[in-house]
Amino acid sequence: MTPQPHRLDRTVTIHASRETVFRFFTDSPRWASWWGAGSTIDPAPGGQVLIRHPGGVEVTGKIVEIAPPQRIVFTYGNASGSPIPPGGSTVTIELERQGTGTRLHLIHTFADATQRDHFVQGWRYQLAVFGNIVSDEANAGAAARVDDWFRGWSEPDAAARERLFAGLVSADLQFRDRYSHLDGMADLLPHITAAQHFMPGVQLRRDGDVRHCQGTVLADWTATADGQPRGRGTNVFVVGGDGKFTSITGFWAK
Image (cartoon, rainbow, N blue to C red):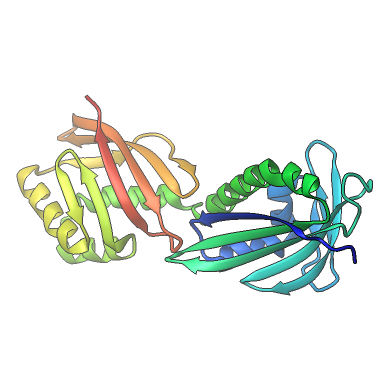
């Protein structure tokens, strides 16, 4: 094997569990979702790797090592033989738990420094696409969780409200808006009780579709009481790898 002394390193954090992230290295439809239609992977030592970029460039390789859910190693080379021959470079991807999310560390080794430099921007782009596609799948139920957050503010039963939020937000949730500066469930729950006392009958509802990018969700909302508008705005939700909201910031429209 030709020596590959030139190394490219790239690290990103993904708001999903390692198990969720690793599925995109073992399932051909998921593999193709971040590389291009027709890309396939056989997730076993010696298994074939095929990447079909949207621009028509085709890459082949073989699995050298696979250890779910923490590590995969495969060779990487152009089917055409240029600029990298088949087997001419090696990709190692390692996954580590980081809080409730995942730290992905990519190492790509090359025989030639020029080849390495050529791939720097490519991996910067490709891992951004990858992180968002994984987060999209992990947060497919984000709209329903956002609806539960708004619904909880008008839930009259304190015990039911606590159960709802226990499955929805992290214990150390930070919530900020014009009238809230809260840290943790112990701060959130009595604040909502007070809000119901001083603003009886107010209902919060999501207004339109949520927008999601890399584990952050935007949702517009409206507030009504007795059928009359009382306010509107936008909330920014940060989602942890376990699907719970870790931070919420609310912006009231003027």
